[in-house]
Image 1 (cartoon, one colour):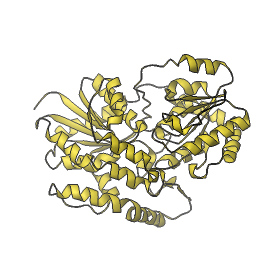
Image 2 (tube, helix red, strand yellow):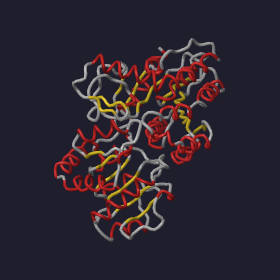
Image 3 (spheres, rainbow, N blue to C red):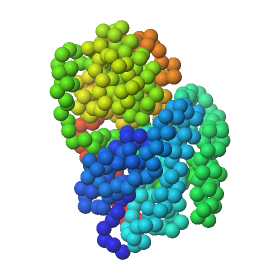
Image 4 (cartoon, rainbow, N blue to C red):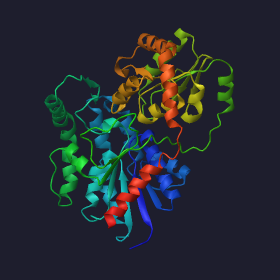
Length: 424
């Protein structure tokens, strides 16, 4: 048995999904462990910047094709697109582990979407502990309040039996028809028994479950895994630079704090979003920064009070902004909470509706459905957001929750503990 423990982090999804894994990976490496990230080629440079060894999963063209697919951002069809784009992990994850020394002491920390592939490794390495890392509350199924299913906000009066039925209906009609044949094909190739439904199977795979969000944002539910270790927001940026460009500093100094708009790093179908944003800020007489790596989504000629930026470290720019209007990804949501600024979320799919509802319940902002977005609605909502004294007060209170340090340490302790327990 080799002495060095090898912690392997399987990161999947958008950049905001990768950063929390890198946060834990860097802490594990600081502790002297061997660490490897498994991630999409589009995110490989962030592992390089962090000084973390990595292996690439999948192809860049498949990742890009999923983002271009208009069904990607549909609450009913988006999961099917995501699952199809992840098919490569069923061969690449087992192949990666098969090429490791058979006596190497390994722990796999996986994105929820990788759990079915991680379970295949147990067909020849049953000793490897698997840790499920949940990025947002909606990654964990519950029948308790608050309950948000896609873009459906389930009323509190709905009985528990009907909530169970809703999950069964969603599985039967939207998730299992795509996921189960894919998983069973991979399991059959390894002489493993088939599964009948994805969700209950996935929740049974890990030895430990951890959250990348705190209990004050989402309290533990009675039907969450009993092996759950609650963490904190893993606010991480692989870029060490915190200084802003001369152009941006000049823009910030030339007038009042701007409003920042971003539809998320993975959204390449946001032209309407930016059109509404431009009309809203001009109507209200505001200054704005449009944040997107896809310049073609934004008008070619912008007025002097609107600045386009391809990328900005949110930890540096948000404290100098008046508000953030964004898609509702968990990482962006957390950065706005840390900065203590109002946020208006425009959820479109996946965990975004649940995150938006939680921000509103915390009194830190409001939300508008992206599918119903108009310039008029955005103008009214933004005006109300900026005039709300209670939201500003709540934002300042919530920002104090981020003062403590060592957010990755407790989760790394839990991961090390499950590894040690497995070896006893």
